[in-house]
Amino acid sequence: MRPVLHGDVSSAARVLLTVPQAQRERLCARMIAEAELADRHVAATGRLHPVYGNGALMAAARSRPLADEPSFSDTEYCRCFETVLRHLIRFQLNRPRS
Figure 1 (tube, rainbow, N blue to C red):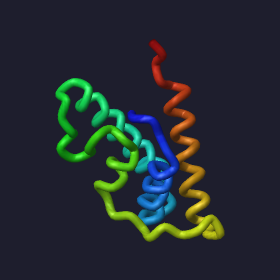
Figure 2 (tube, rainbow, N blue to C red; figure 1 turned 60 degrees about the horizontal axis):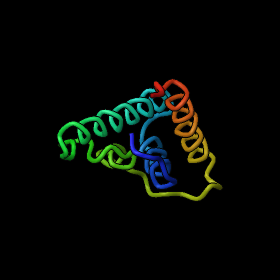
Figure 3 (tube, helix red, strand yellow; figure 1 turned 30 degrees about the vertical axis):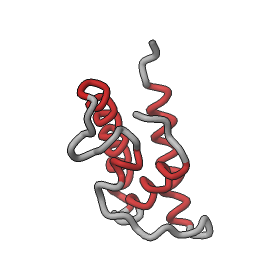
């Protein structure tokens, strides 16, 4: 997956806001996996992945509906943002190092 910036996390969190809480963990993991898949596709072919884009989490997230971005005074948005950060930490910890 390409380096993750604030906009990537925000986009993924906005996607999570559109689904019931019970679906958020699995959807978050799926978006990260899709970004990783797209990044590998770009590295292998030199072309964007036809569905998930350039390997950025934002591109994988934006293949789905996004909620309007609320402020951090919105508790559910904060929970979604935290979910994305937690999954990214897990992804980084489990990523093979070369």
